[in-house]
Length: 170
Image (cartoon, rainbow, N blue to C red; front, side):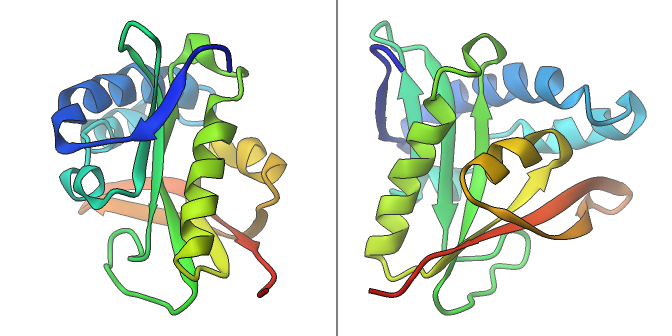
């Protein structure tokens, strides 16, 4: 990271986050998924989540000119079900513009999530990783739990990996 600033996202960031997701996911996920499976999933995945944007738990990395180049956040609620498991948080909607991959943006956003989650009493973080993102999460200390088929809506399924990182209680 050079001059990019990590900040908490707001609902006003919805259009810019959507554009970031739309520029990131098709390019970065193409190496791991067939176009036939990826195209319908992208229609759903490239929309900014208004609940996350309003939560105070979603972060963006912005250049000095204001271009969003990375994003990601966390929630206590499990994606898709809204269920709560005491002490477990869930990483959500991480993305980096392809030209910005490898500059530490994802790691910096993750650290913001980790600090906030730990201060909220989270003892483990989980994520539903896309197949192409498994190495990123593994480098952050996440371990593979199981393979899953995430149903984004009826008939739209994306093979993914549940990954988890445990923290020591202090």
